[in-house]
Length: 267
Image 1: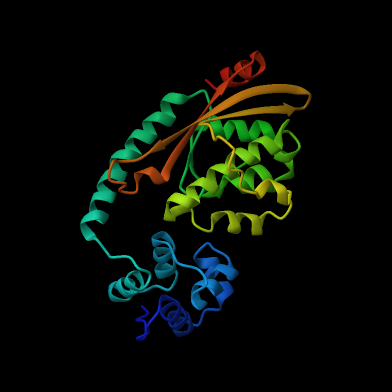
Image 2: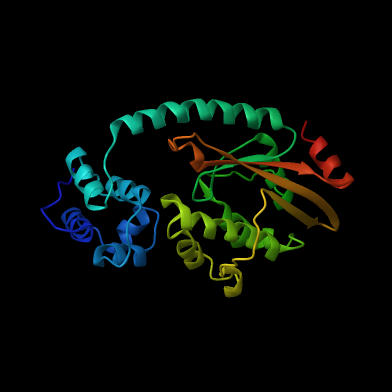
């Protein structure tokens, strides 16, 4: 396990730790699920780290408890074991609720997202929906999987959305607003944009007049049949923000007869 050398700033500590374990900026970025540019900006002080990013970097560097504490302090965060214990306790209860919610929502599709919009859990109806959309019964979802990658990085999905731009703007505008208010989504737009250059640049712009809704209308044209659905987004959290509100559940419902018939097949 790495023990960081004495240094004044977070960037110096991060760079020293990276050098000790022999990682390039690109290698560290891959391990920490971020971009090489973000690592460079963190090391030079151009970017301020979030608590979540510090934890991911510490894990990537295989740091011990003392080094982790040094990274947290240098990043401007205090380690609070009480809060971490409460977070674990709350997350355990929240997970039980999510499991039950997904099970009871069948035969309608449901999925769970973390704060970075990675799909981390789905119900059986969602898996069967993916099989239907892709026309394959051998589809195996390997989670976690970025929701943005699924919707906008796979041509199979691009081709069936009737209003792809509307869906993209719904998600992008939500992320923009979350970046303003919490550390979990900081730099997320930049990271997603770098991975998905095929999305038109204008779609990424922040729109101050956009009014995000918890409901996402999604109409799909699959092999000539139009399926109208709506996804209702629920956030799960606690009054003390013990990590629970980093979990979102999207519950899908049918809006037209074609979608109702399709979903009923999955009972």
